[in-house]
Length: 108
Image 1: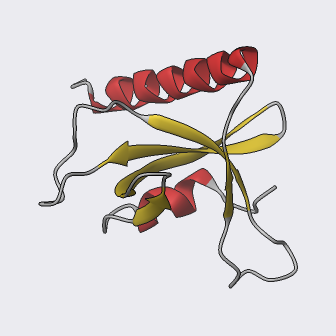
Image 2: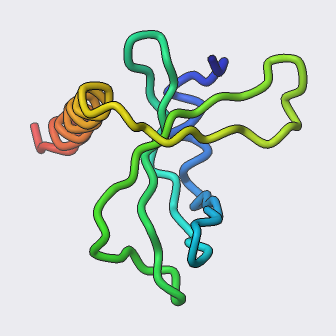
């Protein structure tokens, strides 16, 4: 698991962070929305971008996420989520994250 702390990540998100995914038929650049934990495993939420850097209508993509604790400079690994139950838990947790963001943005 990563030693990521939510507050640290939100500070980094002030400047947009992206990752390039090598798919079977193309490379897709995605904006990193957040990294979060479900059942002691880390996951990453990605938003695919078009050639101009705008979000596409492809929804949010979730992957398992891991860093090498012995080498912080090593590229993190992304893992495809094959299990439907695992994917559902990850999706629900991301929805909770979005709800929290909306609550924080509400005027008092």
